[in-house]
Image 1 (cartoon, helix red, strand yellow):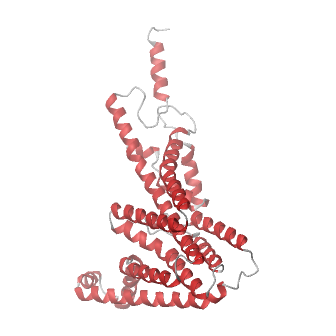
Image 2 (tube, rainbow, N blue to C red):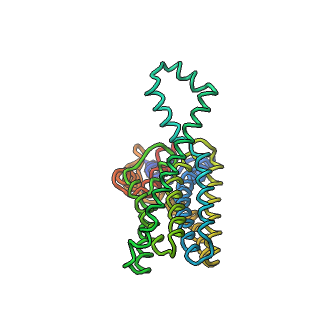
Length: 345
């Protein structure tokens, strides 16, 4: 055997060694520092994904806290109605993506003009003013329709589960809230893609709110809380999508902090221990969950194929299968996680 054959074998094995990045074990110190920086950078897309999930948890916590506060008498129904009106006004002013797309499609069907003429029409001040008025009328009609539907259904909320005990109603409501969080389409908040299970998520949230409304004492209380719940669950996703697609990431982070602040404030009105538990839970979720997920992606390996073909983590296979038939909350996390192929580019 040649005297340097052993060193060649070690060199080959070092090339086959799978590291957390695409760099080899005999890389220079500068490339190692670059790979460490890459790990830090890749952590933020994962953390932003968990921020989306935690924000929906805050929405569910706010709605649940409102029901409890009205039931114990800490908050009156008139105050809840005022919150609903203010939230609706904010939504009418801020949400404009969906309405803009619908108005543009209606205009294309009506006018059928050339693209150049359409661009000139869009840029005109008169068209912008007319479009704003049309969108505002559509939102007002939608708000009035939802309000009438909730008002008609409010007396039924107090009687539809009269034979069910309070413990059973609260337990079923909690299960439905968890189903709503698990099937909520978090990816639609960042893109225009939809999800077939989003209907299941919305129905679960509304039915959970209906069960909580059935435990209230008066029709006015049930109407106020149900109206706030319907508005929060139906308007929260398009509003957040509006801020995430057209605004900077700072606005998205501010929205998340505001939602958690409101949830903590309402839980503190019920019991300070609930507020402390909520803050600790959200803090651990936003720190440990992204770190655990990033660690799993870098430690779970499928097999060693040598330096000519990079070994892929098992979670890459999980990503493709979960995208097709998985729970949306985990599909959203896996889809937004950085892949190993991107790290080497």
